[in-house]
Length: 53
Image (cartoon, rainbow, N blue to C red; front, side, top):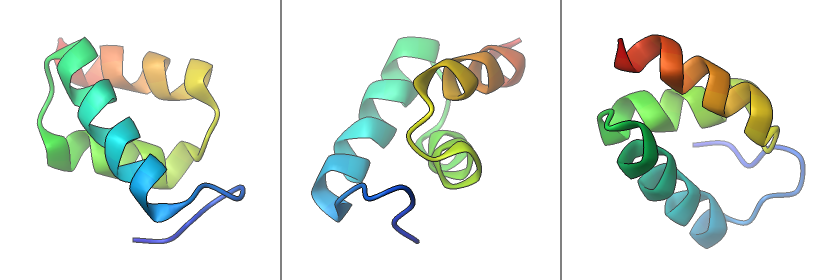
């Protein structure tokens, strides 16, 4: 897992859990979204909504 845009590993782990729970997606899907979009929350939320459908 790569750290993008200065995110620390523990913070990124928490972000994965939060994104997965918020959009009811798998942790793996959330991890891939965060790896792709980094710390851009708006882009991550948009991508997660597409996965959740």
